[in-house]
Amino acid sequence: MTTEEIQLVAFTIILHSGNAKTKTHQAFKAMREANFTLANQLLEEANDEILQAHKSQTELLQSYANGKKIEMEIIMVHAQDHLMTTMTLREMAIEMAYLYMQLNSVTNNVRG
Image (cartoon, rainbow, N blue to C red; front, side, top):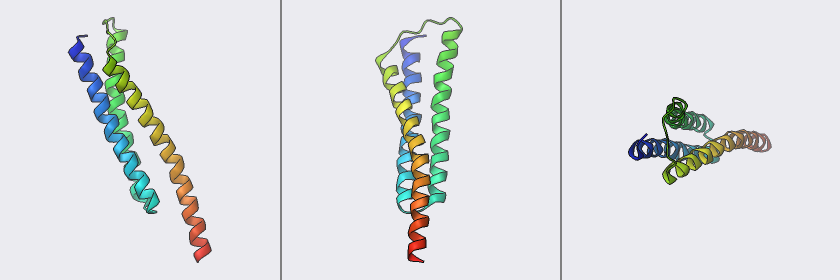
């Protein structure tokens, strides 16, 4: 693969993982506001973006598996780091959503 092709894949991964990160942060805000329906929707949208990033990553791996030489580019290292961090953030957000729902339930029971 050419340097330009590798860079294009890297920027595609960064774009979609960045979109997923934004959606995840929006989901955290929705959780704080006890809007769990919106939070879950945003986390699903984040997952869709992660899947798009992963698709680009998979295409690169398939090219490598088919014998294409791939030179490592620093931007690809950054892209992979960005994607993995975003995936971890989303996983944590899913756990936090559960905690926020539990807290909301307890708070409503105390008030009620």
